[in-house]
Image (cartoon, rainbow, N blue to C red; front, side):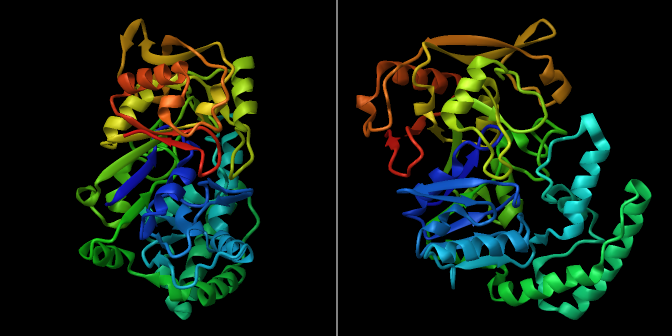
Length: 425
C-alpha cells in the first residue's frame, strides 16, 4: 500500500509524527518537495528529533529514505542531520538516496533571501531566510542552477560557479550595494559535500519505479502545507513549491495513480507563521492560550506561531485540491479546557457568504468568518487509547469538522509521542 501525507493548513500540522507512525510499515519514505525551511518533529520516548531535509522515516532503522528531485537540498543542513542522527545511534549508511536532479541551495541563495526581505521592509513575505525561494527561482531560470549531479564533476562545477558568482555579485551589488562573495569559498564547500554525499546521489525516479514494480510499500512525505502551495495558496505569502498533494508527480516522478491513500494532516485549530491573511486568527488571549498550551513556536525558526480557530473553509478546499480521502487531526489535547470552540464554516466577503476558499490574498484579508460554535471539554486526553473512551465533546467536534470538510478523520492525536494516537476505522 502506498500513501501520500500532506499538510492541509499553513504547515506545522504534525506531519512528522504521522509519517513516523506510518513509516513502521513502509519500505521507503520519500520527501518530494520543499527544503530546509520545513521542520518535521518526531518524539520517541523522551527523545525529540527535529528534521528539516531528512524524511521523517529516518528514525526507523531499515527504512530507505529518498530525497527526490522536487526538493532543494542544502548539503550543509543535510550533513548536520546525518551526523546528528549518527551521534544518537541512527545510521543512514546504505539507506539514503538523493536525486541527481535535486537543486542545491548555496550561500548566495541565502544571501539573496536576506537582502530581498530587508529591501521589502514592511512588505516582506516572512521567509525563513534559508535560500529556498532564490534556489527555486534559479531552477526555473535554468541558466544559473546547480544540481546534485554537478557534484560528480568538480572541474565543470568550478567553472559553473565562477560564472554564477560573477553574475550574482553584479546583481547584488547593483540592487543592494552588497559586498562581493567568493566563488572559491563556495567551491571548497561543494568539494567537501561531494566527498560526503556522492555515493547517495542516484536517479531516484528510476529507483522508485523499480520499487513500484516489486510492490514495495512507499510513503510519500509532503512539506509545509497546502495553503502555502505556490499556485493554489495565499500568494504571495506562500512557499516556492507545490506544497499540496499536487506536487507529488513533478516532485518525484510518480503519478498519483500509484497512491492508494492521500492522507491530509490538520491541527484541531489553525496556526500560521509569518505574514499573510489568516481569517480565523485570534490575536488575543484565546490565541495566546492556544500558543502556550500547544507550544506553538517554529521547529525551524523558533518564531511564535499565529493561532486561531479551525478553518473548515480552507481545509475543505485543500481536501478537494489534493484528492484527500483520509484526515489525521493532531493536537486535540491542546484544546482541553475551553468551554466552547468555534469552527469557521463560511466566509462573508463584500457582504456575500461563500464556502469556497478565495486564493487571492487581498480578498481573503477582507473575509469575515461565519462560525459554528460547539461545546468544549475539560478532560485530559493524553492517556486515552480508544475512540469510544473520548469525551462526547471531542466526538462532536470531530464529527462537525468531518461534515464541514467532507472527508473522514481516521487518526486523532492526543499528545506529542508516537504512542499518543487514536485510530478510527
